Length: 442
Ligand code: 5AD
Ligand code: SF4
Image 1 (cartoon, rainbow, N blue to C red):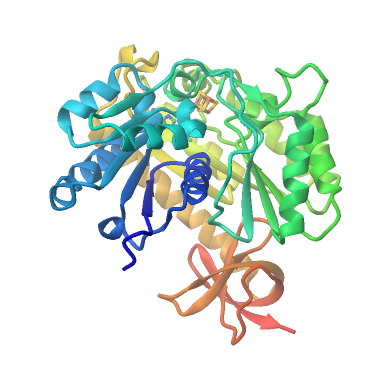
Image 2 (image 1 turned 180 degrees about the vertical axis):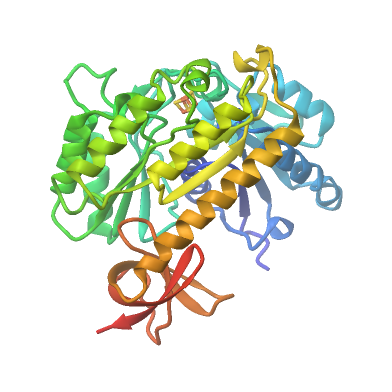
């Protein structure tokens, strides 16, 4: 190995937002002359991009940081940097350092764009560098990115969240909502299409409130229409929608252009109006159903995916049954299911009536079984159909290519030719539960 070449390795936890932020860290490191290492053992710098939305994500990150102690002993020059949401919690950096004194850099979500300066500073000093800033008003443009998910490209349209759902730590660690300027987003998208990206996924904690903080009247419905009008064949996706802001205008905007995927991620969280109120979600069961009905009225084949939580404080068996009945009604095309995780500093963590883990576990298993059954039935209906797939990757375990249709359904198929990044037609031959097997059609 050439000793002059410095190598980096990034370990990412959590959501798409974090995956994209790791692409920015990789971009900054690349601009400094670093190249990607095969794994942490061959790296000169290991960056942990953490998530604190649930306790298990934090536990995993801490376990993996701890595991690097041995590596650090063998290689004194190894730099270990920990960033992301976890470090942004009050007093967290200090407690992390007391557990893992061998960490070199601790940085927050708001310092990401300054990572080059942080690393340069650290390389000239011995002691640990802690830089976690509280301000959250900045939007940085022009941060280099080393994208890792071709043919999809992630594009931030806004940062932060104003909603303060009572269970959620995100508003505390990511600050208030701030939108990028429309023209900056459009320019980035145009550039990505020119570079050959075939799918753009717009990212924000609540994309529907895009533009509320801008003075030029920009809003999300107009933004997606404008992006979809960029020349070229590509798919446009976005996440996450908040049902409270999911207006008729949004629905008509989705319907207005074929490039906008008819696939909406609309987290419901619970089917019980009582629980939704305790969660501070600003809608009730009836309102959510009304949004679903309107969406299906305008776009009958629209896929809807969701996030659902069980075991929120004071959730009774009847509340849970409300969730079950809503899931049956909605016929969701996919659901991320979570057991409520008590997060320090949130309103819900102080609520009476925290639910026993055993009760939550039972509820989540029931929910997962139901959703799997729903997805299996949906898969069965695909058999014999011809669908257009954007080929995303080669699955070396299954020894075949995989891609998705516009509704997000995954299809595996074989091909002699590398088709990654191409739109292909496949005929669905059989189902594999959640995913499908297909044959290429010329
Ligand atoms: N516990 C469990 N799940 C949570 N989520 C957010 N906060 C928590 C928490 N404290 C889930 C929500 C959200 C998704 C991104 O993570 O369902 O939509
Ligand atoms: Fe968290 Fe609610 Fe904001 Fe989503 S909308 S990030 S769940 S506070």
